[in-house]
Length: 281
Ligand code: PMP
Image (cartoon, rainbow, N blue to C red; front, top):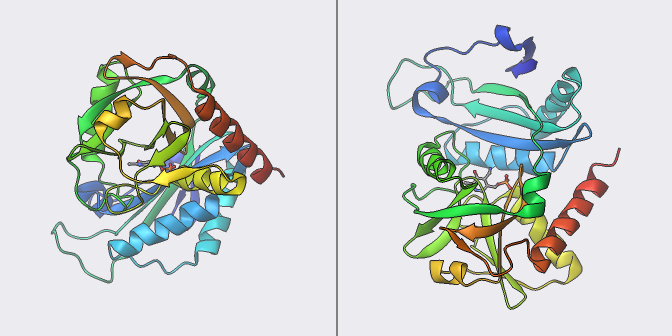
């Protein structure tokens, strides 16, 4: 596997980071995961724009233009002969002697490499289970920070319960999943949490809303309560790696149909169409 480490493409075992890299010590950095379909990175520009926004929000200033970074990532995809899978990239603030505060002159450290392809086809066809958990994260969930401690804790809880995802609840309101955005359908209307500081504005979420607009399908950007989640006609999550993923059971309670509902299936199909047309070479 070839890895992009700052300006160099190296073999994985040659790519080394410093023990005083602040990403390693503090989680002081930002990241993205991009899906690759037939060698083409889907919504790469949008992911890189979000990366730059996240970096800016925590005071990491990147000298390279986003377009240049995109080109280097395309080279990495080629160097790895990637067809399907993911691309992970992270930027840490840089290397510094261990103090909480930092010097403004640090050089940000970039690492990018391919993630293996994992099929989500069966899960998308059959639906997955979720559990709910309290949202105890900080109040800047709009930043895609390397610091994922609470997300990890609740994802592990889901995994140990045999579930796919933890749905997070803050003050009775459903915010998002530990690594996904959450949608409900009630009486034919799609609903999801507003893109504010309490959630990460998912690229998949945005793409789906774009598709909704293009088709004239109704939706509401409005917070909803845990009770509304449990009483929804359909629930699904979105993320880069899961696309549109039906949730058929929450906290052990099965939705009446126990299979992906008609709206979710329609959105899945529309999303797949968008991927197909935007990754055509
Ligand atoms: N929320 C959180 C907390 C996430 O980690 C992710 C996955 N990156 C998402 C939402 C979904 O974002 P995207 O569609 O851009 O993958």
